[in-house]
Image (cartoon, rainbow, N blue to C red; front, side, top):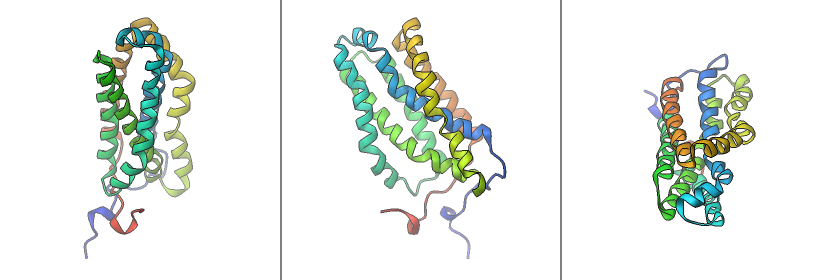
Length: 208
């Protein structure tokens, strides 16, 4: 009997770390954290651009967190059977979309909605990263692979957020988000090129 396509991965486990693919995952995490935190360093500029107070600009971070909180578990459950690479590319592409809206929006409400959906895509992406990295390598390398894939978060917090704040001060907050969009589009190409595809979970193994 032929195996169901859901039960077969299209890429064998690597016997050494596939750094190009793992670093693509790390960059996805980097962009996620930078997208989340960058408004906190640009409150006066964003407030002036949207014509609202700094307190209201702070809600851009709150809406992002709320989107992640509300979406992470439901989206993880709903997409268990989806193939992994297309799902990851959707999450990364979502950041390109919402950062573009943030860069060009002149309406506070629209910007809030973009930030909420940025959080939704973040919740989906964080649910994928560790599992994706572990499936790319042999079992004895899984811990190291996950460590590399998750490097983006601490790097974004320690280096990316101050750099994003400086960039926003130099070129403006709208240009900063537009640059983020450009970097995300490059990451989409990199991820599509370097990451193997994996099947989703078969129905018998899906969590309730």
